[in-house]
Amino acid sequence: MIDTSLKRLAALAAAALVALPAWAQEISFYYPVAVGGPITKIIDGLAADFEKENPGIKVKPIYSGTYQESIVKALTAHKSGEPPVVSVLLSTDMFTLIDEDAIAPWDTVATGADDQQWIKSFYPAFMQNSQTGGKTWGIPFQRSTVVLYWNKEAFKEAGLDPNRAPASWKEMVDYAQKLTKRDASGKVSQWGVQVPSSGFPYWLFQGFTTQNNVQLMNTSGDTTFYDNPAVIEALQFWVDLSGKHKVMPPGIIEWGTTPKDFFERKIAMMWTTTGNLTNVKANAKFDFGVAMLPAGKRRGTPTGGGNFYLFKKSTPQQQAAALKFVKWVTTPKRAAEWGIATGYVAVRPDAWDTPEMKKYVEGFPAAAVARDQLQYAVAELSTHDNQRVTKALNDGLQAALTGGKSPEAAMKESQREAERLLRSYRRK
Image 1 (cartoon, rainbow, N blue to C red):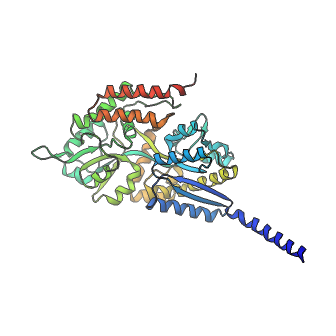
Image 2: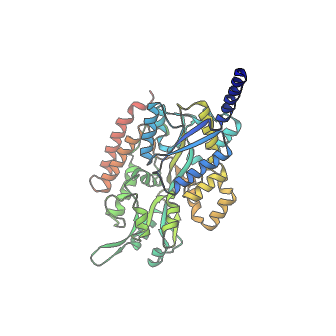
Image 3: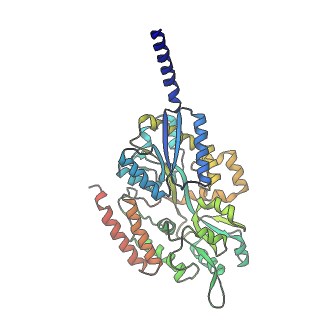
């Protein structure tokens, strides 16, 4: 009797062990957004759909605030020994995460022929901020470029072709002068153009520097070129939009309120992320256009946005599960659906060949502008000690834009600080 009972208990225990692996691998997944809102619903939906197709894996999204808050939380968790398995963090965080020994290259788990083809399937422009030293550290997910939005009704009122955006710096200034509305006392009711200088000033500035055919850093992330004459010249042009041409509001222009100013017709053109595309489509009560940024010596924009990173302290089983999830969520169909739902650029060319994306672009051609601009795109500013090196540039930009320093003095000071921070990272 006792023997039979023990056998029955053993059988029940064995059955329980068989049932447990249904949720054996949990992937904790940091995602950079505040709790609530439409994006969290999309992420929750993706996690649920993946779990249905992969009953051995549970995806646990953790909404970790802004990108800046998310990397702090991820690195704190890494140091405490309980990091997430995978996180979406800025592509520019790559060197910082490597220096902290927090992440593993995807190549260490993506070893099959199919995996290698998958890594090669993304746009090369996005991989510039994802690979270094012959290894793939980030997988593109929510990526963007800077684009120009314009109010077609304002263009008509100013006697401009509503279907043609400015193609050069000179044209942008000419258009903006026609679009700026002043009353007899000089008070402005509509500015011609707005380029935000808070939040991510370095990123918008990289539009100007790329168009002036100069890079802000090297590919190793250990040298910056803030005081290059072409960089100073690009900053002078940005400063002149307000100070000389008087077509842009003076002082610091807020990143967050720029789309609102556009909706309220306070500005006729704005530079901002393609990630605002869905927001503009939903909230602009007028016909608008989207275009590549105007050319200086050339066209150009930095890429931007977030990559998937694989955290080193997760188990091999968790890393294998994370690979499965990230491959699943970046398939052509899902990359297309994510781009349509959010306004981010679908990160691989074959996503644009899906029926869903073809139909979307046919009805809304503006969606393809950021994709077409990728041929002119460069890597977003990313270095070792990235936050402080970037802050050195941001401080200089804001000093010049507020009139506190000349562009030349501001950039020389920024370069001195960046040089001090990066010197120790250079290989002998």
